[in-house]
Image 1 (tube, one colour):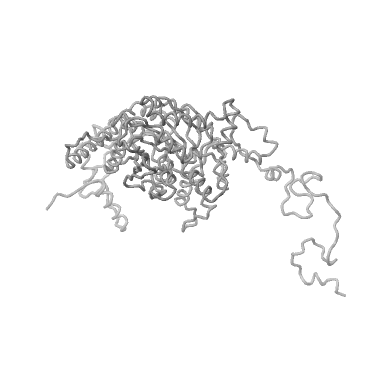
Image 2: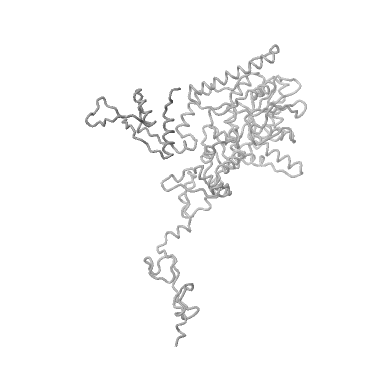
Length: 603
């Protein structure tokens, strides 16, 4: 017969089951949490204990073993609203940013081990596995020792093998980044690895979805990357595809870039052809580098803020590389980057037909492909890879389109992040909803919570659960997809620029709100502080500020302190008897006894 098992959990379960069955509990052995050395024999109730409940048995055994249970009190920690929503507080952001800067040199992508023609495929595969395992151990050790939380990254070795092969066979490695947050999608260690593989390879940034930015925003980013020393071009696969479709149908397409750039440059006192024509001169200068000394033109380059067309982009690919190529007869351009930044869409726009399968779900491309645009120019599409990063949280990765929305388990952190970045009036103006206002004891300028936004959106769209409440999970997926597609637009600024000053697209919603303001309250709005205050409705103001309130009263002259001429009461007119003269009262719907109605007929 085995030893009887006793434990706290088993004792609690047994006691609950017995109480649920209605079994009366016997006498228990009372315990005290404080044990003194000497007993108070006069007051101690000596009682023979022959039977104990399972709970008392466990406590008695623990007391005999000398185990103490300590209850900690007054160690209360208030959980802020940001933590409940899955977001970081301002202090945590500052602390983590400092910690990330100190440890960013530990953050590397896996390297392919050295190999040559004498290396067998089996030895190479085993070396790749060992190198990849060592890289995984270094990241795990970094998390454990430095107490840092790494974002989800690609843990499948096959995807990294695809990246290694694309870099090795490419002359120009183009990182495609999202224009709304280029720093998140740019991997500095990837650029270092490209230079380690060969000094002849060239790094380049392709800022896709740049049509979501204004010309001034693109100029700011072009200047920033110019100082960083990396070639950068701005491109929009979707906008260029629409432009080419319109040209094929014979429609005249007006390029807004030219008019916008000319107007802005004339205002700044520049030459109108500095940005467009000057860049074309740079391209021609670089393309003639074969005749000149190698690398003489590659040292000097100019980042333009103009949206490039297809032919201009291809000319740029040819112009940036003037050194020794992997294959002498052709130039290979490798397109790498995070999932869902538009690598495959860029290739399809260049070829004008569907060469590569595309999807809005990140990670759709599984294998790299080589495609020839023209003789001597080859494009290589690499599967999207999520690089290890300290910068973002999981909610930021969902909002940035890196992680699939449909595989999201908790929608609260991601929607809370949208509420923090997109102002309240922009959300209301975009969807035509009214989000519940803060209570009187709360900050009137606080952003809405995820629940407030999802409730308002669910009511508007009619997304209801079986219990008659708004379906917040379904609403969250629609809002997140609008954020990823750019309907809800938020642009991250370069360093040392305030995020609030980098959102010109939000100003049109502010002007719309200001147009509907009460003229008496317009002077309270400060031009420097562009915040929309709570607007008081004129109808409500007139109704609730009446001196005389008369509700459902007809013909009553002294109700609630009524004084003649006070309040919005119509001027009294002499009563005109309408209808039967014997009806003395003014209420037509009031039932009257028949004998009173026919009283005038009596003799």
